[in-house]
Length: 197
Image 1: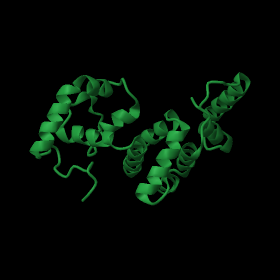
Image 2: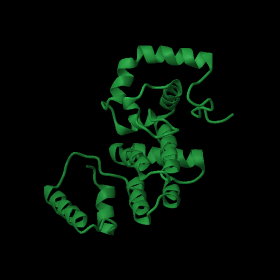
Image 3: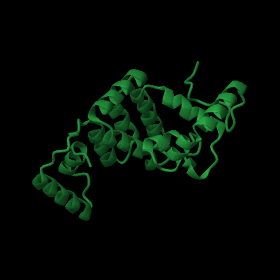
Image 4: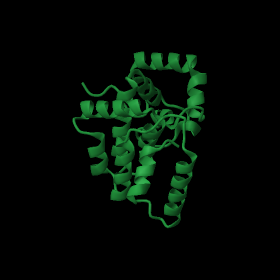
């Protein structure tokens, strides 16, 4: 059997049992789903409700049964396993548009360091290769791949204490790098991969 999150029936799912379950879930959780679609949750949640076929955001569309089915199935996975599958999907779609990589950036930057390590472990376990290897081989240009690998593989400091002198120095270095358009600098990559924003 294939991956249960794959919908082979196209736009509408013809399975009567799934349709009944989806209608029930959609009715009882419409407020929650609506809050996710309308931006009250994180970008990864919105990515889960994005059509696998066309990549369009569903906020301005009526959700189709197969989209709700995909969201329900993704929410039943372990969070690390779910994010590993979403990262793989984002990498596969990155050839169409770099926009799909936003999910990987958010997963790496907005999650706890422990969750990021768990996602990398789940990715390796499910796909028999590392997330870093897949990023390096699927993302271009190489400067973007280098930055994404650094962001994904780092263990971020996630405490509230901040040394304001260091923060100001690093902010000025980032500002200067943006100003001269030299974002592939090793020090810039180090700042972006080790700091929480």
